[in-house]
Length: 526
Ligand SMILES: Cc1cc2nc3c(=O)[nH]c(=O)nc-3n(C[C@H](O)[C@H](O)[C@H](O)COP(=O)(O)OP(=O)(O)OC[C@H]3O[C@@H](n4cnc5c(N)ncnc54)[C@H](O)[C@@H]3O)c2cc1C
Ligand SMILES: *[C@@H]1O[C@H](CO)[C@@H](O)[C@H](O)[C@H]1NC(C)=O
Image (cartoon, protein in one colour):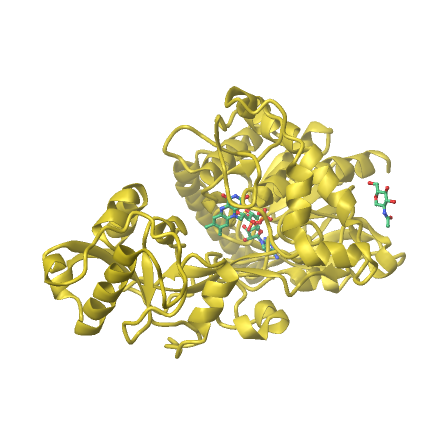
């Protein structure tokens, strides 16, 4: 007996010390503090957290959707316990680089956009065939127009909330592809929007006594009452395997499944199995919702980018950086492993990706990839200098004199330079040559081009759990599952065929806030 309790004491102490160290390291990196789950009663290796005066709203996932939900639940008077399986919070949200959409914001007005009533239409157009088929009753009948209406109508207040209540600079508005009006917001400084939003929100949440964040805490199941209502979660400490049961209403915000390349992605898109991703390589958490009867929509709708950088230092990495489309837009070309062009580089992402995937593959372990060279002439290098600095620094691209390229690549460069000089691309029909100015022949041999290896990558999963405008997860027969809300990339039905850039951060804020407020309201009504 004594031995056991002594060992337990030491164990608890060690866990405490580890937690303290992690906490300190953590406070340094992000600048917030948080509590670790207390270890109290213990039976059958299941540890039950001490009962709070009222049950907390349990938020699963600390990306933008989870943090937005936590903030709103706190504001509505609830206690919040946020569970995150990674060592650090922020998910894929912290990496977002373009910005967040808002229609009708004061920042848009400052730019001279007096009226923006096209956001709904732009979103429906981008959602494409899946939206039309749903409207005709050909697919699962989630109310897509209602979701898009909520997303777009609340976009102005989402951006103003981040700017005014949270304190994030979002004063710069830029045009992105698929938008008829500039409406994607980011800050004026160097910090990318994802990092700016996440760190500011975390700091804000950390100031609230009713907020508790547990990292390295992976939710492994949702607990269901006899009547089918979700009444809590079971989670596991990633560091020591201890299991915990926590009671409360649940906001589920664990992100998408692009990083689950050999799991959920392979299941719904066998053609994309093993493809690297801009998302962290992690198993998806969709199965937890499936287990409580949630419906899913558009699971085979996955955003693929033709060009992710193959890092020469770690070519087989499943996690890759995006090679911005602007590199091709400003004049870059793509060459096969044999040093030949094979596609009009200005085609849509789908067409270019497909053309690459028809080349012989060059797999690395379980990662499926292709041997493609992205090459920019001096004109294109100059036009993209802002991006190139980072890519050169990271070693994704390098500068080389034409004479130092392989004979096949020199031949392809000369052939393309002649094409640009002639003004028509008889090979592939490219019409826009960007800033390419390299001339064909011996005269170009001392000129410097920028080259790097690229391969298709997955970026975003449009599909996910069926849900409604109150962010309730919908089960069989599209009936809401009691006690369960969801927000962010885990949900489906908004983006259909294709997500507009900037709209996923937006859905995190809009539906995360709704989910947090609704879950808190349900707690108060008990
Ligand atoms: C490189 C990059 C750039 C992007 N740029 C933009 C952009 O500029 N604008 C835009 O709108 N969108 C952008 N996106 C997309 C956007 O960032 C994501 O779709 C969005 O951030 C998803 O947020 P989320 O909160 O749903 O999930 P995430 O931010 O991915 O967070 C989910 C969290 O849940 C945790 N989790 C998962 N399962 C469990 C579990 N079982 N238990 C506990 N925790 C769990 C994960 O560890 C993760 O931290 C970009 C994406 C990437 C990868
Ligand atoms: C979808 O929601 C809108 C309200 O936003 C409503 O007018 C419409 O009838 C709903 N459609 C269906 C099929 O329920």
